[in-house]
Structures are given as structure tokens and as C-alpha cells.
Image (cartoon, rainbow, N blue to C red; front, side, top):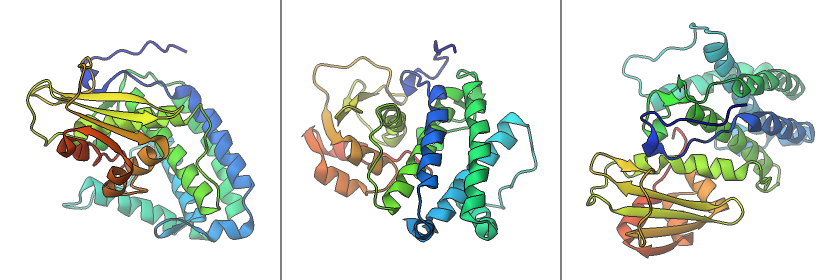
Length: 284
């Protein structure tokens, strides 16, 4: 597999992420979770308004959508209603799919997800990471390079598995193969998060994530946009430190920004730090 990824016009998004090899082990982890569920677990709430069974049906819909659109070139998917925003469109078609699958049993969902998920993993493994692909709205880019689009899908599948785990009383999966890539992908939302923040050129905001999944991401005001590509200065205008659990929950709105700020360690310009804590890395 070629892991030498280029940055044509996308350097402000930071170094490319190669998540292609992680789809198969993530799929295996999902199937192990689902096959361990007790019958009563499928009716527990996983996210507001959706049970575990509903969320699994949603993941299957995402799998089918990716294969139909990008592998098979199928063009007969749902369309925007007049005046419908992207967020409203996505929420509507997701709910329509989940409603349609109410008649499908957990056992049938699991078996189908096993089959189709394997095909999705094979699809992503074969992609060209530098090719143009679906836009990533929370990163502010359309079309996005495939490396970001595929990393985005990886984080979505991982996040839904964590929501299922939490619904049945399990904590976040600490597997060191997955969480560092999830956090790194989520941090690519920082330039878009700060897009309306006016600051002198060269101003830097740094977000540090503690623990084995952590790292440091520095976003710089360039006058044109905020960028993850600029070299770090010795002392950023604002520094935010979060633990990995708080970070991924914040980015997926499992917690709200004010809760993240309360848990954060902040140095420097508090207004800039709080602006960075508005980060969201899902369609919300």
C-alpha cells in the first residue's frame, strides 16, 4: 500500500491521515460488540431518539450508501428537498432509513452488517488517498481529498461503536490502533472552527490532547484562513489541554463546549481558547 500522501492545495488541513488499513479491524471490533449483545441491549438508547438497533441500522445505511455511490456509481439516491440544508437533508434521510428498517431483526441486521462491512473495508483499502472525494463540511472543504473523507468515515464508524458500547455499560475502547487516528482526524476541524475569528496574522492557538492517543495541533491565522500547516511559534496566543475522552466527546457533541472548557487547562487568551473549544467534527 502506498502511504506517501501528497498535499496539493490542502496543506492547511495538516499532514494527511492514512486510515485505510484500519477499516477491517474496526469492522471486526464492531461485529464482536454486536454479537456479544444480549437481546435486551438492542432496545437501549444509544443516542437521543435512537436505540442500539436503530443505530446499527444507520451504520448499515452508511455502508450501503458508500458502496452504491463510490464503488458502484449508483446515481439514484435521495435528493435534496427545495430549500433543504445539508444538515436537514442528512438527518431526514438517516431517519427515513432507520424507520424503514424497523421490521428487520437484530440477528438479520448483524449478519447483513457483517457481509456489507467487509466490502466497505475492501473498498477503502483500495482507494487513492489523493483523489478528490466527498466534501467534509465540518472541515470546510468540498471536494475533500479521499484521505480526509475516508478518515472521516472511519471516525464515524468508530464513534457509533462507542455509542453502542456506552449504551450497554461499556467504556470507550482504548485500542491504541484507533483512538489516536480518531483524535487526529477530529482536530482537522480546527481551521474551520475558527473561520470567523479575526486575529493578527501569525496568531496561533494550540490544542494539546493528553495520554497515549494524544498529541498537539497548532492552528495559525494566515490572513486568508486558519491553517494547520504553519510551524509552531515558541509561545502560542492560547493553549488548550484536554484529555482524549473529553476531546472525542466534545467533537461528537457527546458533551457541550462549556463542559469541555470546565475540564480544560487553558493558558493565554481565554477567548481564543474558548473559540477552539467550539470544535465539532460531525454533521450536527
